[in-house]
Image 1 (spheres, one colour):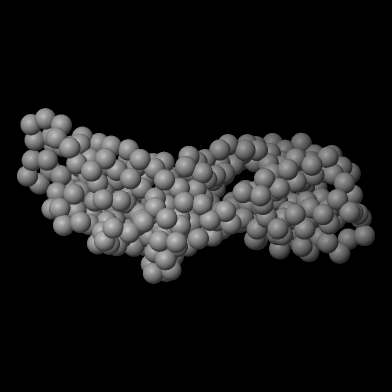
Image 2 (cartoon, one colour):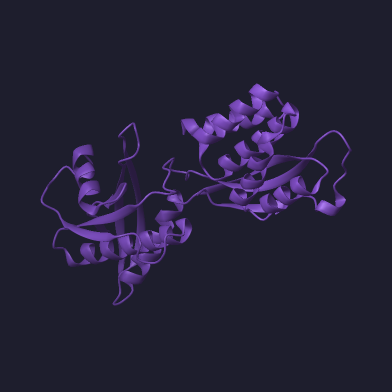
Length: 278
C-alpha cells in the first residue's frame, strides 16, 4: 500500500452543499515518489552487499558503511530494523558492476534489488586523516530496463582508534539520502452529496480508511442515476489510486467516464497514467 500523509483542508461542518448537485471536498496529500536517484524502492525487498579484500581498514570501513546505509533505508521505507540484509563478499576480481553479477546477487540474497559497495580506494589526507573513495552499484530485478545504476563519492575521515566505524556508519547514512523517497504535495477531490451515506464515506476517506470508503461507494452503484453512479465510480478510482492499484484505478475511471464524463476525470487520469508508466 502506498504510504501518504493526509491533511484535511476543510472540516465537514463547514462544507457548503446544494440539494441536487454534488460538491467537492478538497484533500491535500503528501505523495511518495521515487528517490532523487530515480530508483523506486517502496514495496520492494532489497539487500546491501559490500566487498572485502583483506585490507583491515578498507574492510572495516565498508562493513560500517553498508550497515549505516541499510539502517537509514530501513527507517525511510518502514521495513523494520534488520529487514535489509547486509552481506560481505570477498573480492576475487569479478566484474561487480556488470548486470549479470548483480542479477546473481539478487537471486542469492532473495530480494527484488541489491546494492553493492565496491572495495574502497584509500589515500592519505593528512595526519590521522584518510580519504575513502566510494563506488556503489544498484540493480533492480523488477526494473524492465535491467539497468545498472552507478554512484561515486568520497569522504575524509579521522582514522584514530575506534573512530572509523562510527564515521563510516554516518557516511553510509548520508549516502542513503540519495535513495530515500521524495514527497510531493498534491490536492485531490472527493465528490459527495448531501446525505448521510455520502458523508460517512467522506469521513472514512478523511481518516485514510480508503477501503472502508470504497465499501460505501460500492453500495451506491446499484442506482439508476448515472450521474450519481459516475461520482461513486470516480471516488472509487481515487481510492484505488491512493492504495497504489493504478490499473484498477484506471478501470474504475473508465466506468465513471462511460456513465457520465465528469470535469475532474481528465486530471485524475493523467496522474494515474504517470504512475502506471513509472
